[in-house]
Every structure is written in structure tokens, then in C-alpha cells.
Image 1 (cartoon, rainbow, N blue to C red):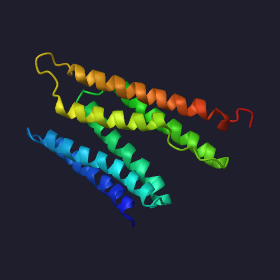
Image 2: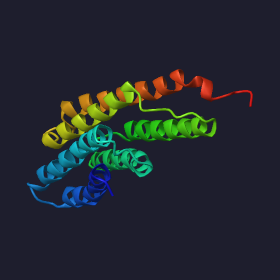
Image 3: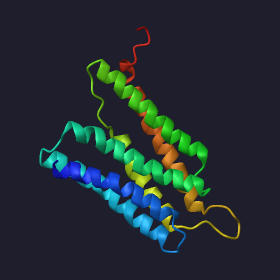
Image 4: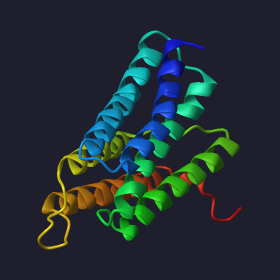
Length: 181
């Protein structure tokens, strides 16, 4: 197993660690969960760089890297959703986009075409990870019972970049979906 794949697997291993830290009822645990989330997010940048720069691109990495990213991000979103800080409708947008783009890629592969990650997908991933980090740092307001305004800004950024990148994938690759076949 090469270095890039080891970093991807580290990200996978960090997901349950994050989840355990999230559920510990201690004042420090949210910051420990944030630290794990940041390390896991940084492995995404690093493994991609190493894979491309040192020619360590493998089929395993092509499969596992995006899967690890999605599971990491969705784990954090589900935790925030359970805490009442991430609305379920936004979570459904993220999940639906992931299924739709994955389905589009499957159809493309069946037609002998590979759809690479687009710029908007990279922006979506980066902005989502940054927003989730920010949400770890801000606690909901105990006085109002409502989440902090930053939560809502982050939810809007995540939902908007997710919708935009999903729509862009379909617009740019609409020829893959042959409506008459």
C-alpha cells in the first residue's frame, strides 16, 4: 500500500474516532473532535497531492478517496443534524447530490467515459470542510435556543455549493444521459 492510500485509510480510521469524541459529554470533546476532523480533512489534500505528484494513483485510491471524503463529511453533518444545528433538508440536498453524481458517473463509465471531479466539486468539498470546522468552533446560543448565525451561513454555503456543483455536473455531462436509449 502506497503513501497516498495509507493517508486515505487514516482518514477512514479517524471517522469513528471523530464520532466517539463528538459523543463524549465533556467541554473539551468538541475541540478534540474538531482536531480529528481537521487532521482527517488535511489528509484529503495531502493524499491527492502525493498520489499525483509521486505517481501513486491507484484504482483503490480512485475508489476509496472520494468515499472516505463523503463518509467523513456526512458523519459530521449527521452529528450536527442530531444536535439541531444542521437542518435535515440541507442534509438531504447533500446526500441526493452525492447519489445523483455517483449515478451519473456510473452511466458515463458504462458508456466508456470517465467524469473527473470538476472545479465546482472541489470548491464544494473545500467550503464544506471549512464550514464544518467553523461550526465546531461556535456553540449555539443558550439564551434563544437557536443556532448561532454562523451555523446558518455555513448551512447556506454548503447547500448552495452542493446544488451548484451537482447542477454543473449534469449540465456539462448531459450528453451522457441519452434520453432515447
